[in-house]
Amino acid sequence: MKPLAALAKKKAPENAGRHAAPSRLKKLVKRAAQIAPAVSVSPQLKTVGHRATKIAPAVAVVGALAATPLVYHIAAAPASASTTSGAGSAQNLAASLRNPLAPANQRTARDQRTKQHASLSKSAKAMAAQQAVSARHAARHRHRRHTLTCSGSGGTLPANYAAIVRFLTTHGYTGLAAAGVAGNIYQESMGNPESVGTGGGGLIGWTPLPTGFVTGNPAADLHTQLEALLTYNQQWAQYIPTLNAATSATQAADVYMNYFERPGIPAAYNRESAATAVATACRL
Image (tube, rainbow, N blue to C red; front, side):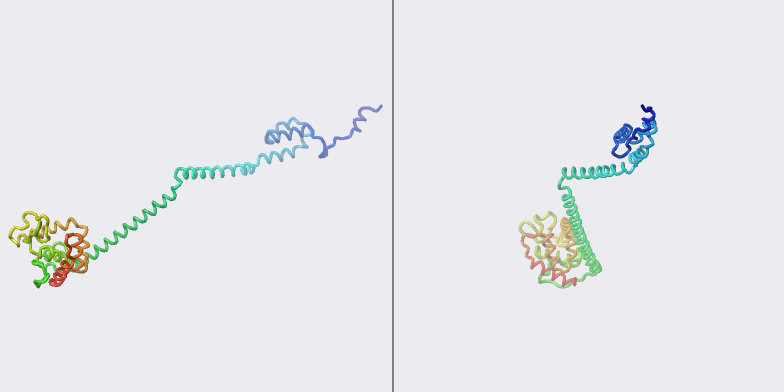
């Protein structure tokens, strides 16, 4: 009978190959790596015997993989990006649901503002151009206000036409504008301040005829009615620049007829002819 020591020496060594059954220690390490980082496994390794050295490299690798920040960055970056993108998409979706036509409405409002601005700009430019023309004509005729010389009578020339033109040109009207007004006066009263018709009278045929306009004193009544004419024209003040911008006596007569006199019987030809005759007589 062989001693136990001899039998122990001849005992086959444990199979340490890859097909060997896992030891209890390896099972423990594998389970610890699945549940927690290798850091939590390391305290258990302190209690392991001399076989711990065989699994130390594996533990170190597992610990390195668990501790590396790259793993967490890769996992966290898409989540953060998707969260931000998701939040923006959610906000856009909510805005679209609240007012699905908002972008179109904004474009429409912007286009309308642009058109309004363009329209206002055109109106302002037109008004500025008209005022510039009016200023040029006023400057052209300013020197004639005190040196106005008119000659001629009869035909389509209204009575008192020289006094009418002189009065108007000293109160801000150009010579052609004054001729246009005088042409209209010719059609309404032939230039006679004492003219009285059915329901009206005076230079421009006031209807009804105000008290004190026709008193039997032609000179005084002429002055009274010319002063009243200035007041009358002010109710259409927005058209005075247009009247002063007229480039001919005919045009001025039409402007005054359409925007100031507004007669029931236009007889435009008579007004235009008389205005032209006044402009010729006064060399306007």
